[in-house]
Amino acid sequence: MCLSHSMSVLLTDFPSASPQLTALTSILEAAGIQVLMGPGQANSSEDRPNPSLIIRSVDGLRVDDQDQMFPDFPVNVPIIIAAQNFEAARIQEMLELGATDFITPPFTAESILPRV
Image 1 (cartoon, one colour):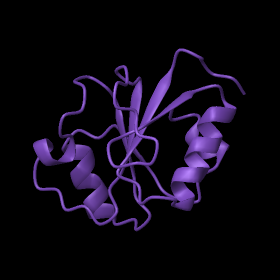
Image 2 (cartoon, one colour):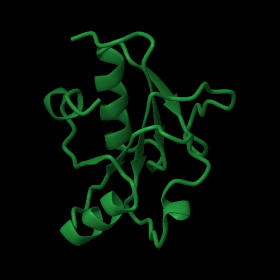
Image 3 (cartoon, one colour):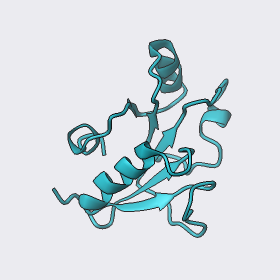
């Protein structure tokens, strides 16, 4: 499945060399989507264009307000949160703060690409 070569997805806040980061990168690149790495990721994209979508890992992240949830992210860019430890109340809180959707591992093309 090839979506769009002009589409780019920024992956950020994943632990380095995590299987989740590797899986997401493989799925997105196989679909023809440009993958950008956020600050703190290996191969981060310092001069990146505004992404079409952001996928942010929130495992271990404590978020109290929208500024903490989406610091310095481009305005009006959808943000999907990735959480290995699914807690319904926490996911709901992040959705209320402005996240567009959420995903949990294991990541598969069938579960990721419809959201992208």
